Length: 287
Image 1 (cartoon, rainbow, N blue to C red):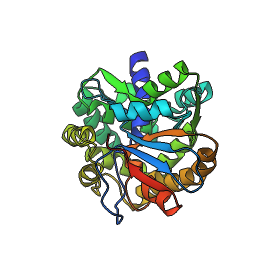
Image 2 (image 1 turned 30 degrees about the horizontal axis):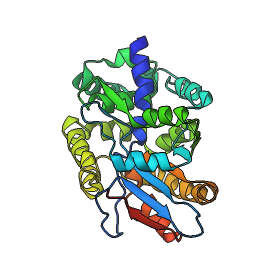
Image 3 (image 1 turned 90 degrees about the vertical axis):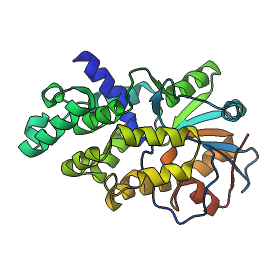
């Protein structure tokens, strides 16, 4: 039970990994996870990097261009500052449900969730009865990667920033992230979304990620069975708009390395296009 709880805590951030990208009308993006933000009064450029949050160690990579940009920056900015003990405490508390899943869900929902858990990792719904549905959702998604030796981009960035005694800041809190999921999905919608997510989809996403193909990621993961319009609003659009409001003042003060789920980069309401609309020059770093 302790190991299962630990896995749930580690996996929760997967929900925000950008595994769904908003439908876009903006120009096709170049194949790069790293983008330089300059102009509009900035004395130094900042960098925007798309992560996958969690990946099998054999698939993990960090390009030289990304290392160079990180070294050139003065502050690390993440979706949530997991270097903050308060955020970690909040995440541990919110991993547990307000009531047991056996009371929260209908018999039909419990049956579907039990089938998903058994298929993804041989876990039964009784084993996770005390967890929140979002924790279970994160567990199932993490199991779909098909490995146990996981690497975490955010944790590596935090470790590097701490070694450099560099300040770390979050764009939002873990509580606000949980709220976004609750607003985005009803219990039935969350279970239906999980039914549409499997190991094959994860593999395709990882391949596209390793090739830095944001447009291919878009094609793979914009299916309606994964995210409906309501989910896009709360999981992507509103969060991106909030972040773009906060970033200008932060970028004025110092050069940032902003690492967020790669799904937040693309789309008409993605960070790249929103920053361009705000007057910044945003260009891919190719080497």
